[in-house]
Length: 345
Image (cartoon, rainbow, N blue to C red; front, top):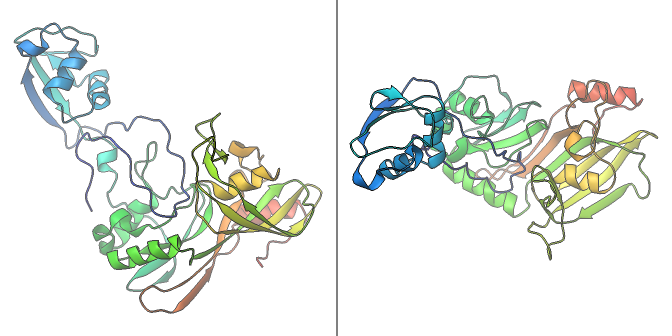
């Protein structure tokens, strides 16, 4: 699987139908000294009297300005044999500059890392895994290692030959539950097509604040885009005014109290934070989901969302497959505080 080049900038592609974490604005960061290389260059007439960071951008244009500034901040650039950390340092013709080029954390992200992965189903073409809460699915700023992708690369040699290690859809870091992963490119393309055609059934269980009222089943058909008032959030948006994508969720109340409700959510689209946003739009933010107005409850310190059912027709064998993941312990404990059971439909 191809890795980003040393020092390259950019982010990973989002798989079709993804419902993944919002990327932060954090720097990609530098790895330790292992794998570093020294590069020597000389200031020419075109860089005379320029700032050092501007001169470096001219002399080594294959690297981003932000990457070169990180080298400066970390003392990895020397000028005429002396370390220099100030970007505004002026240079002159003939000055000798040496850079210790370290790989970025991003460039090292696609590496195997052994970890326990709960596999619900495995055949020659695909896996179904039960992701625990707290595990990031794909490397991104702030989480360049320790992700499900890293674990898949360590578990299966086939994952090295498939883009994104076969990941075709995502769950938020703190959402638990089922995911399907392809083991070869043909299966991956077929699964992406099934998701795009809405032929992969995905049901979630969630705990939400507020007593349920009205019909037991409701459909939220409301576009989702980045919240214009807060870039770290998504929101229901008016497509005439803001960028967004159509999103539809069916919600069924399974049980409830005066404090909250236990609901089943069925996705028809896979937008970022879709269930969390749609539930919040109904004035039922998820328990533990502080980003959208929820509060913790007992052991439930994360958003109370669990992907408990996954069903689809196997893209190679044609067999109808259906999988279920039991309700996690933190969610069970929180439900007991409301006096509710935790059986799935």
